Image (cartoon, rainbow, N blue to C red):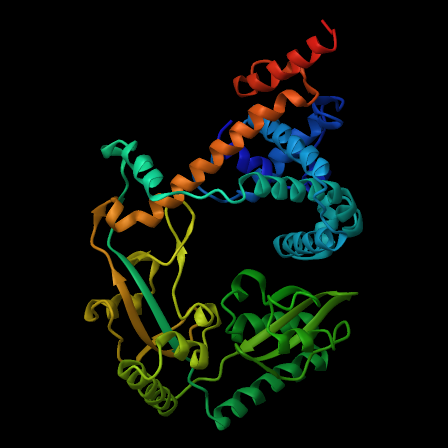
Length: 470
């Protein structure tokens, strides 16, 4: 068993969509069993189909083999059995919440609920019902794995021992990395400009209502909307009334006041001004189209924002306010506001990190950083964000590393994290070696060539011998 197999076992989807699309060439049959938990041939096929769908469009993806999928399913079933023995519970509300999120992801992926149901050959209700048991098992196996490794710590001596085992020519090489935070202010357009843009949107609304309909709305969205995604989705989104964390509250509230085919008045969200068209609505689900216009800011508004930030910077430099407190109080960037302004990303292993390489930064920040030393705050900088809006920020350079080969002094936390994960994997592997013999195990002869299943087969053989089965 290795870490990747454990990850497949815990992370694999329930097959709600894939099961509808899998064409069974041969009759389904049981290919594995742990206790009273069976694994079907179709479970293996559906799991692979789900993984293919999740990784579609990604480069250099190596999908697991059928042998690895079966091993992951055996691991999962064993964890579920133990979770049930230990009385671990997953509430119906938790399962419903996961299912709702899953369906929303599917709908966003396929474009609409109707397309999803057509592809699946099932209603959303049926998809949820078919996926429920798989979701329950997945959550139980996660909780059981957490329980097994809960409380495992790593000591400095263990980190050093782990590092000492790594061949020196295998140590990763890190480019220069930056730890940086920002306080962002969005200059507000003046009332006259905002009113002018609002009148334009009301003119679009009249064109649609005076016989243009959805087709005219689409034309206007493609011509005038400043939503960056309009080229991909035509300004259409699938909403759920309860998904309040993903949508601007004003946008969400305005959408669910509309009837099918109705166009909203102009609304103001944190992104700008909008009009919305209700395409279709069913209960808490709705499909809407929108046109976004961002009122332009003038030099006067930018100067005002810079003066405001300059005042904040003076307080931070003087020590009368910390940078983190200033971010919480004044920043308009919700992505960093509650992390003391820290920019974050993913390292080469996919783990979250605040240490970023130059290519992970926006071009305006890349230009600014050479003027700063660690511990310094920039002057207010005007830049253009991903929505093509002019923003103003001050930047705090917390740390800058030089290019280097991995070492304990500069990379202790990274090394410690890897050492901890290895220790957890060892504990999990020992747990399985101790517990596999306690379960009834059955593996179909079709998987006789899977080397990774040897421990499971030995356990199955011992169990058969104990029961007097030849």
